Length: 123
Ligand code: SF4
Ligand code: SF4
Image (tube, rainbow, N blue to C red):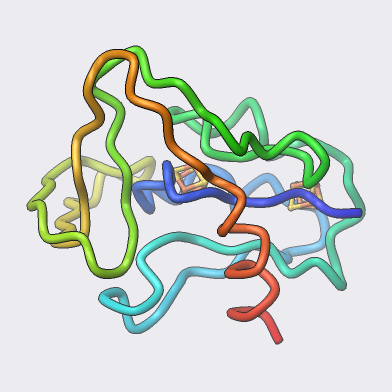
């Protein structure tokens, strides 16, 4: 088992600094790999990254929701989406994304595709 970064990730880079085994990778190119990703072969399941994420994007693999229900206003960041997002990251750097969509109140989203995406990016 491993931890997984889902498409709620907005690349603010808060999690990677606390990972004791440096297994959190920045997706690149950003249009194709818009999130950060956890290398499942290196993650030791310590859970230290979870509370660092301001967007609650990180889950244990067994708890990644197949029916995540939005409160409204959460931002989904997935390849193929076309929404523009600007924010400020953990380090104070500007973040600009072009692959987002804002979720509506009560909208239900399957986040489990991120399990394979973490595996694929880190292969
Ligand atoms: S659970 Fe621990 S080892 Fe795994 S990615 Fe998070 S901080 Fe790193
Ligand atoms: S802290 Fe959350 S939003 Fe920031 S890079 Fe990590 S998973 Fe993505």
